[in-house]
Length: 115
Image (cartoon, rainbow, N blue to C red):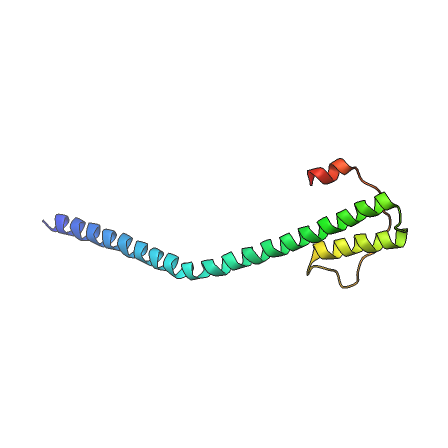
C-alpha cells in the first residue's frame, strides 16, 4: 500500500510541476506581447526610409538618364549627382571621413532593370 501511495504522490507532483511550468511559460509569452508593437513600429520606420531611398535613387537615375540624352552635364555635375544618390541611400550610415569617387563607368541598362 505504501508503494502505491508513493507512486501516486510522485505522479501528482510530476503533473502539478508540468502544469506550473506551462503556466510560467504562458505568463512569459503574455508579458512578451507588449514588445510586439515596438517591433512593428521599427519595421514600419525601416520601410519608410527604404521607400524614401528608393524614390531618391529613382529620381537620381531619371536625372542621369535625362542628362545623358541632353548631353549637357559635365563630369563634375555627374559626380555630384552620383554622390548625392549614394549619400541618400546610405542614410544614417555615412562615414565620418567621407568617401571619394575614383571612377565612373557607364553600366548596362539591363542591369538597372534587374535591380
